[in-house]
Amino acid sequence: MIDKLTENYRDIIVQLGENPDREGLLDTPQRAAKAMAFLTEGYNQSLEEIVNGAIFESEMDEMVVVEGIEFYSLCEHHLLPFIGTASIAYIPDGKVLGLSKFARIVDMFARRLQIQENLTRQIAHAISDITQCKGVGVVLEAKHMCMMMRGVQKQNSVMSTSMMLGSFRKSQATRSEFLTLIGQRKP
Ligand SMILES: Nc1nc2c(ncn2[C@@H]2O[C@H](COP(=O)(O)OP(=O)(O)OP(=O)(O)O)[C@@H](O)[C@H]2O)c(=O)[nH]1
Ligand SMILES: [Zn+2]
Image (cartoon, rainbow, N blue to C red; front, side, top):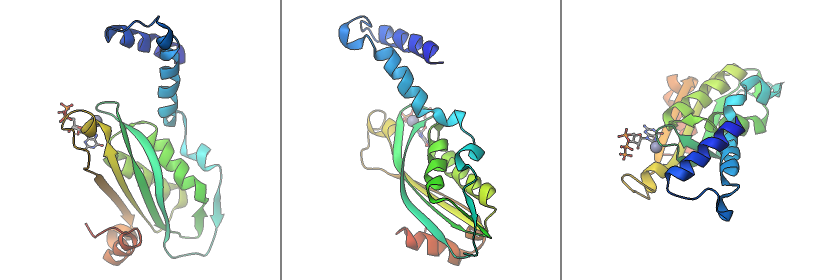
């Protein structure tokens, strides 16, 4: 895949009117190919593999919140980055998930071509599926380079998306507790 991508990036450089053989650009097609492979490596990962069995028995049955997980994704419309943070909460039902795995799950889905809404949804469903918990809430806030560097060129707009499952969807109190804890105003 890297070889084919390298060829493609070389073609892009030519199409842009640049000389791919000038010194500064000599290794660029391969570097860009490796960078793109890294930024989309989520396609080669599975939930089982990244969770790696790190699910532990626990009688904890109150809300657990992990906030401020930074992520870098690529918008599927322009292949430009969108960058932000994820906050995740869940109410366990006999099993808790290893702390680092929340960030790994965010990264696995972020490192694909995405829209923010689907990224939010996929993270929530993954945590629900893997932990079989009573409920999950996920809030993402991000800035989209396709809106900042080009197009409407708005530098200060932030997109917030949320996905609530189980008790977070059914109970207004649970949802409010989560949003209050992460310093959000109620939507
Ligand atoms: N809902 C949603 N839209 C996104 C996301 N990332 C990019 N977009 C939007 O996708 C849309 C694509 O619109 P098009 O009109 O097909 O493309 P475009 O001509 O490049 O649009 P402009 O960005 O308005 O110049 C734009 O409105 C983008 O802002 C995302 O994560 N979620
Ligand atoms: Zn975009």
